[in-house]
Length: 345
Image (cartoon, rainbow, N blue to C red):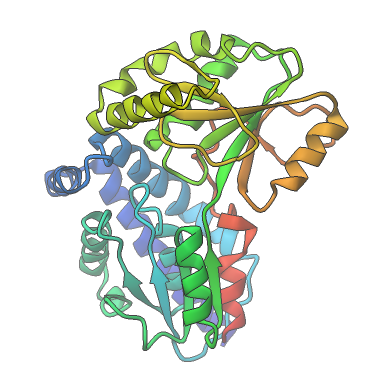
């Protein structure tokens, strides 16, 4: 039985790696779908879609990486379960990892798409079904999840409360809103600050792994960040981003709320982790202990932590510029999706 499962997984991984090859060739039909996705949701620029597609193909669908990853789990040869997936639509293909976990477990994904991201995933599924008929019927796009045996849902804090109630009788993973933070020690190089810009501005800051708040050492002048991030000033040419920037500036000025701003970014001292589009919160810390207390206090709001290690033994920090490059085992909210799915069998 174990041999059969290994052979099945091997064929599955081979087909997924073929999908990676297809994506990385960026054929015309894929480019046409990317254009369609952009017209339906202007936040999904062609550049950002390409970044996500390359990340999926290179970090999620490579044969060696997949084989290494699934070797950590025990798969059982049982009847397929129907797993309901409620997809978020904040950044392109944000729910792909969940669906990948479902496929690798031999289950069927009942996918409820976000209206903001309903073009690329069905197209990629179609391509996968063309690569191998074994994928036909493994992904079903639905409006309701009544037939699901288990649920993986991602949404806002309000929708998460609804999901918790509505799916309380089914095994589930429910994710609510989170954001990411960066810790600076004051000795960052210009290159590190430039890389930090990727964590802040990629996908216009709409992802849970985007940095929305800085923790700065006491005495640090937050406005020095502006110069290091000047490279990203063209982001304000995007109409939706510009509208948010202008609106948020206006609200702060009307309310006489202290803040700093240049032509494309607002800095506001605030304890809250999540920030509005085009706004970056910051907070000062006066010691290693003070910082750890602040991070612990906000742990349920934080997806990941970027930046400086103040002490060598700290390994929770992601290098500058890498927050939007999760590996296969970087699970959202630190909940092991694969382990959850394996436990259902």
